[in-house]
Amino acid sequence: MYTGRLTDNAKVKNVKGDKQVTEFTLVINRRYKNAAGEKQQKSLFINCSYWRNAGIAEYLTKGAIITVSGWLGADAWIDNEGKPQAAITLSVDNIELYEGKRHDISGAVNGTGAKGRGKRKDKAIADVGVMVAEPADDDLPF
Image (cartoon, rainbow, N blue to C red; front, side, top):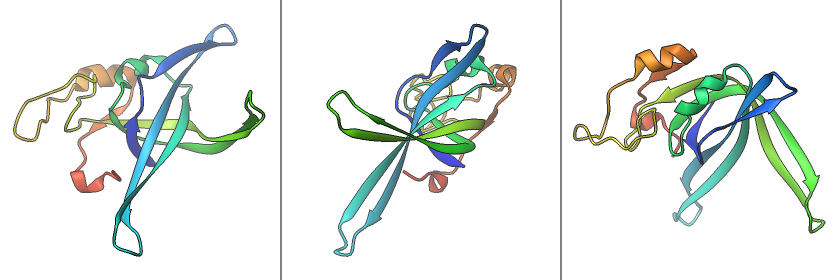
């Protein structure tokens, strides 16, 4: 399972006529201190594909916090300049959406309460068959 933020709004693509895939990129940030005690950060970008329900795309908006699980893979290619490139990919089986400090699950900025937590949108989420939860700030890797 990987928890992170979406780098952009999810996009739905038609594949082989009647099938659809929802594609999005998840960024996972790791903060740590190096041997000299200086704060460091590394970011990992994971390209994700979700084949089960294209209706989820409207909830997968830039900045939203999600947890995904599935099968990892890798793509490698040579770019137009002849340089080798590689990307981590994830074929997603499950998605969990979270309400965050800055965004609710619809991606709208919320300003309710001291911590900025908005109301759950259980009815809308139930329609696309995913879980909604609100993690503790300590549970997030960024």
